[in-house]
Length: 171
Ligand code: FES
Image (cartoon, rainbow, N blue to C red):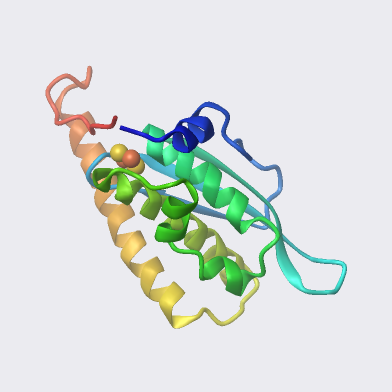
């Protein structure tokens, strides 16, 4: 199902783990599969004074493709300016991984959304203007996160052992 590059990033993911004192954090989830992802970014000036994402890390509870795309997205975003990082698409991530099965493209969208949210968080904390495309994505992601949390609450409330609710699926 997965090519060698995807499996390699899944087995030996890059930049995985929580970052201490990040500049900003993005958290996203997928409504259908229930996977959740956090992206942490550190933003600093580079040697030439450009504001760049100097470090990236992530935590992902999800499928093979979610782990591999988190890993690849962190590689792509590191060292980029905010504008360059915003421009990275889930298609870029999938292409760099040598392709993903069509049913797994939504996993690469999750990684793109997580980075989007981290940048949105950074600009908000800095009281800076938010580009319109970033703001629109943020609004859509927040609605999805609220729906995901409702789904988990409903799942947990059906049975204390979690046996009777519709458990989120992942592969
Ligand atoms: Fe949920 Fe891949 S992100 S199945």
